[in-house]
Length: 501
Image 1 (cartoon, rainbow, N blue to C red):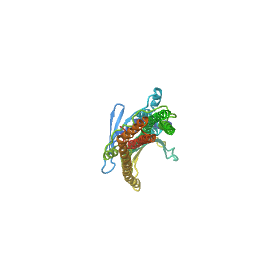
Image 2 (cartoon, one colour; image 1 turned 45 degrees about the vertical axis):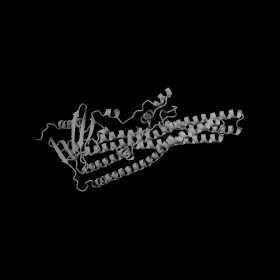
Image 3 (cartoon, rainbow, N blue to C red; image 1 turned 120 degrees about the vertical axis):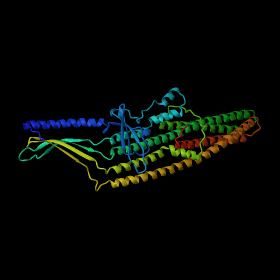
Image 4 (cartoon, rainbow, N blue to C red; image 1 turned 180 degrees about the vertical axis):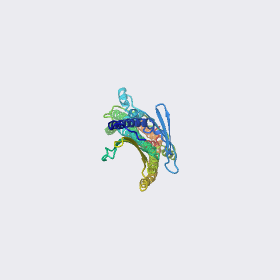
């Protein structure tokens, strides 16, 4: 029923008061909406809580302490079902401060080892790499940024409030003035579907972080074993130099006793100098290998003298097919490819929901200066999906699923090819190592020892001793070379199956 006002001034004050009150109610309403689950202030995402399957179209909210668990399901395609669970915190400020994806550099084990002058272990090197490498930190930051994208996907449209005027130039009065308030209601579960797409994107990003970590760990492992091999080469060349030094001393004694000519003495001295050069080269190679590790760790200088580990001990490998099956289930690049398929399926479900029209309602309250009455109004409407039913985007999303499936198949073929090549080289190096270790090294060492003993007693000519020493040195260096190849391919294989035990 119209309400009569005795004075126009009073009614204009009432109109302005109504506008101020409506503005206050809008602000309170927005705050209330944020606290009732329609516009959550913060969403914290844990990758392990997101299933690899698509959600179905149901939404349920349960309160627990200071957070709410929102579980939603939405149809992705005709055959896939699944559940996505998210934790919604009430405090947005804690979102940036407690993000679990931002890594903080740990205390450098290199500094601790350099102070104690103790050899650094592989586990300590890996800890430094994972906590300080900028490439890993960059990938983790990109993953953390998706939490903000996920938060944005949960937010509904903002309401609209304002002032309205009608019949302003009417001859019999100043017209009607008032306020209005409108809100768009998102239908079809679009917010939940958009959130599920971001959840799948987070899973892809998490697997990409794991792939980056694994690739850098493989690189670190290969450099680590290169250092161990360089340390072993230094030790072996020093042993060979000691043997040749004893040959020089024996030659000089025999020459002083006038039992041999001077030529064998000179040859023994030349061989000893060559061995000393080999020691210098091995030490230089060890220093270079240490610098390569320091560069990977972001260290400006080498602050450790040696690494702890035994390069000659290696755990046995499984059968090729077993290793291949492990690779299919654990390799992060494959996991990222499969997560991309799930993301494409959820994107298709989201595009299918786009044609469902959103509902927009509006209410207004006006004062008529002509009749001194306060009148109200109400509007509600939605677009009619007559021409644009999002056909193009749906078709594109459907094709993107096929593209993701083909990309995953291609990744499987690529990884199997890499595993096949690495496995073949690993088996060859292993066979040669076993032959060198069981047959060639013991026999060449025994031959050199017999030649040394015979030379000291004057029964063996120096040329025969020289050939025995060269054979032993060649066999020993060949053993170290094959050992390096075996570790190179073993690290690559274990990296493919995500197994660094």
